Amino acid sequence: LDEHPLVQPLVHLTRWIIRRDLFDLCVFLRSDWVGLDSRMFKDLLLAVRDRSDDLDPRDEAIIQRVCNDTRLQDLGESITGWSAIDSPHRLLREVYETLGVCDICADDEKLRVTEAFLHAAQRFEMENADQSLQGFLDWVDEQAKQGAMPQPARQAAEGPVLMTIHQSKGLGFDHTFV
Image 1 (cartoon, rainbow, N blue to C red):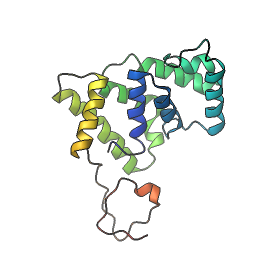
Image 2 (spheres, rainbow, N blue to C red):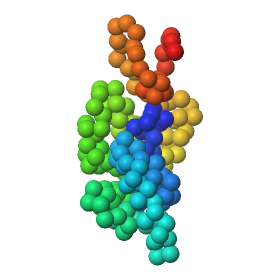
Image 3 (cartoon, helix red, strand yellow):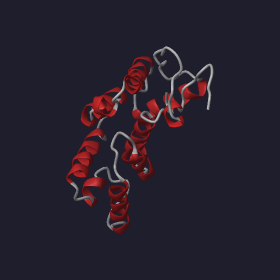
């Protein structure tokens, strides 16, 4: 579950909120959650580079400080708001609501995966005394090492399932034909 293409960017967003590593923010911005195209992404990175003398790349409002694009300004405001959230479950709920999880997860399988990650955050908060975002990331890493965060099962299809290698990433099948 933690390696799914829709979950991995959420882990990076959480890491960015905690550690303010620009790499984690970049992974999130380029993911399906935001879908920042190459031109806008390049413009953002160039703006950060050009303002490196007077700009702290760990600034939670970095996007608003370097971008004029309205969509990125709005996203930057959302990210700044998310930075104040200390509950993993609440953070994920806010991201899902703000970015429209139903719009991003057009099919049932993607929706099941994102819901499973939300439930994992809820389970973490119920089972652990340390309910911090860092505690959640540590818990996710530990669960992944133990194999305790399996991806939700695909609904059984009658007959063979045809998919790209990208779509099949992280899934397990009894028989595979390439």
